[in-house]
Image: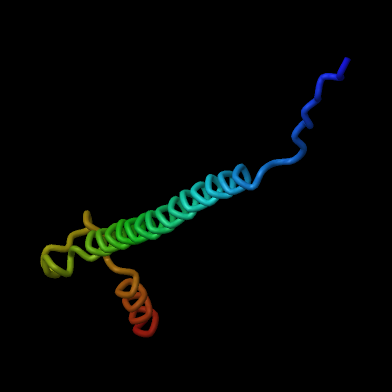
Length: 99
C-alpha cells in the first residue's frame, strides 16, 4: 500500500499578493494626501474669511464711534458722547494748561 501523497502547506505570501497589497496601500496614501491638500486649502480660506469679518467689525465700530465727524460738530449734544479718545485727551490737556 502506497502512502497518500501530502501537499506541502503554503508558507509565506506570494509575490502577486504582495504587489496587490502595495497597490492598495498606495491608492490609500494618495487619497490621504488629497484630503490633506483640500484641508489646507479650506483652512486658509476660512482664515481669510475670519480676518475679513474681524476687519469689517472693527471698521464698523470706528465708524460708529466717530459718527459725529461725518455729521459735523453742530450735531453733537450731551446725549451723544461719541467723542474720540484723542479729542478727549487733547481737551483735558488744554484745560489743565489753561486753568
